Image (cartoon, rainbow, N blue to C red; front, side, top):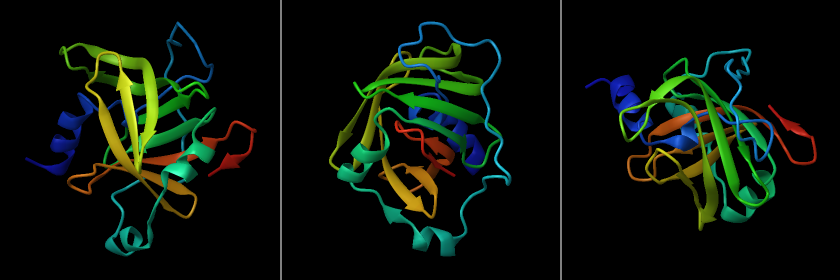
Length: 168
């Protein structure tokens, strides 16, 4: 099975990889996909880049994610996402295209809760299985990494922090 096929199978239960809403507490989903188009394609990181990445601590994640809107792309695909991390630990994600949930239904968005457990960023959202990822930083880009395999699942292209400052 090719890496892209493996990744798409993981997406059936991986909400952290995907997209969110701009408005905290939003109960409806915009009909058009929300997409931030980066200047360059996000591709699998070369070995030299992986060597430069630094794991983000739980304390540092707590300074970045509460109240932030995060844009990104699923590694090795054209699927983009935008997600919102509520300061109350609520979470909303919207995808640029439908993905299959744990019940076999196509979903373009979901909501739930997020939390930090040590050095893991964890998500418990409707329609998908719970997921925890490690977070790494290379320059201004953050990577969500599967803890067991070390595989980069998705990469951020832009983060709008709660104070309005931008990392891109």
